[in-house]
Length: 99
Image (cartoon, rainbow, N blue to C red; front, top):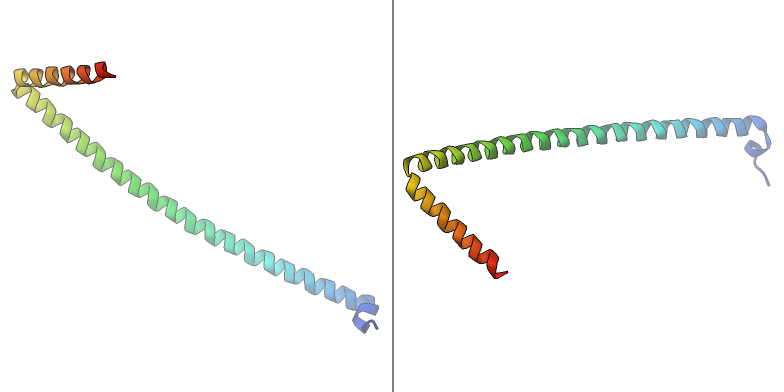
């Protein structure tokens, strides 16, 4: 018991055309979804890049300030700085010798 649609070539052609249009529409929708996902991911990557740049700036500024403070302290207290460095070296040497 075949239907008239299945028997006639025009009916099959119509179903094939309808299916092809449906597949094309689905592919177009999938392409749009991929494009939207790519845009969202791109925006998130850009935000992450900006956050990392800001964090790098903060860390760099902090390190620069610490280096300037250390330089100033050493220049104002050279003998004290030398004593602290010698004590730290001695302590590190003792700890390394125990291993």
